Every structure is written in C-alpha cells, then in structure tokens.
Length: 309
Image (tube, rainbow, N blue to C red; front, side, top):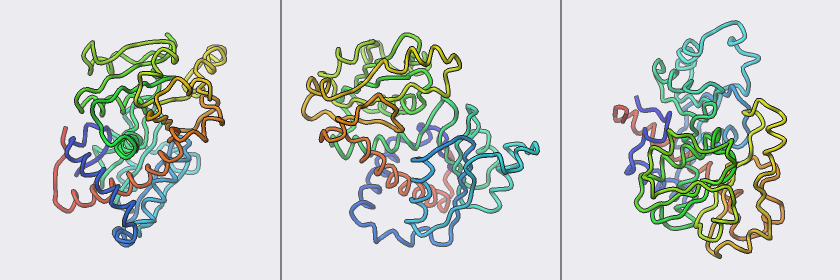
C-alpha cells in the first residue's frame, strides 16, 4: 500500500508525473469528472484547516467521489479514549483513502502502519505538510517553468513551519537550487532540515531586504501563534517580516511571491494586486495537485506497488 506521509515517499519521477497530471486536469477537467465515482475519502482533521480540508474535499468531489470525516475530534470516539490506530482501522473499513491532519508529529505515519487504504498526511504538528509541498511544486513549475536553478527565499517562522520543512526537502532534490532562510534567531530553520543541504546551498539571514532582490521565489510564512507557548514572545516576533508594496520595488520583475496561507499581516493587501503575487492562485493549484495525487494513489493501489522509503 502506497501512502504519502512525507514528500520523500514520492520519487522525483513520480512528482514529475503528478505535476503533469495536475496540469492536464487544469486543461481538460471534463476528462476526470467520473474518475473516482463510487470511491470515498475520509478526512480526519484533528487540527483546524480551511484550504487543505476544502481543497481535498473539492478534489475528491470534482473527481466524482464522495467525502466523509470530521473537522475536529470533539464529537468522535477520541474523547472516549479510542486510540489513533483503532480509529484508523475502523475508518479503513469505510473509506478508500484517509486524509489526516494531526497536532502530534508522526501521527499520520503511525496511522499508515495499520491502515488498509492509502493515508495522506495533511500536516502533522510542526513537522511536515507534503501535500502543501506538492501544491508548491505545481505552482513553481507552472509559474517559473522549472524546478531547478532557482534562488528561493523562505521567510518567517522556519522553526515550526512544516510547509517550509517539506518544501526544502523537495527542492533540494533538484539541481542548483539555493535557499535564503530569513527568520529571527528564535525561529531559525531546524538543523535536521539544514543537514540536507551543502554549506554553499543556503544562507541564514535576518533581513528580508538583503535577499529579496536576488530571489526567484519568495515564500512568506506567518509567525504561528498556536505553536509559540510564550504569548510575550509571539507579540514580540509577530511583525518581524511584513512584505509591502515598498519592499516589492526591490524584487525582480519575474519573481513570484508564495504563501501557504492563512496570512495574518505578513503580506499587506496592497501586494495582492501585484502580478507577482501568486498565493491565491497557489491555493487553487492545490486542488489540482490533490486531484492528481488521489488519481496516482488509486492507480498505485491497483498496480499493487509498495512504499518507497
């Protein structure tokens, strides 16, 4: 059984195939409207979500399938003490796919050990968010025309930012990419991510202005209030990086601005009208990426492939 619990579960060739399928769906949506008819997806969201949950549900329904699930564990047997593994075993009997978001790092990986259907990690704590990364790769490929030879600045909460952890893990697999890690000292990129890179593949800086003019992709993230226990620390850090019209004057004309959303105030609304602002289009690409993922996992299941680890 193939799962997607982290981005490395898919080979570069499989990611290339997924991007190709997602682009074909954009061009020929009518060709896919019955692809998952009769199939059921279960969305088990132990953490709040808007884009990820809606895009998965929209993806399955646009493929002709249906969706069951919950948007919080309060009304489930979890409050009675049911274990994650038992919930997974039970839901595997009802659904053809399980999409799980969980506040505990590694929860989807544990679920995958007992599931009899594909498990998709929709975000586990501050660890990884592989389907957001697939969204990001589709966006970069679509807007930049390539996934290599890029200078990528990621700014904001890099310590707890699961989206940027997964993004770096994916983009390091393509040649000649360089990263600028822009963050306050307290929210630096974890060592386990930096260890994937050679010393000359990244720079750690604290000023966005120092790198915006040299970047092909600017990936903004919010300072995550829910992951910072000290309220005073959050208040001190929350406005560290604010991208506005003035800062955009220093960026290249072909640079793109991305953001996994939701934003708080790290990108001002005056940037929205800039043609380089791609974050809302990025959210739409996410639906197509997830449609392609569902199709690929179903095809892999039919062909009886094993996990790539």
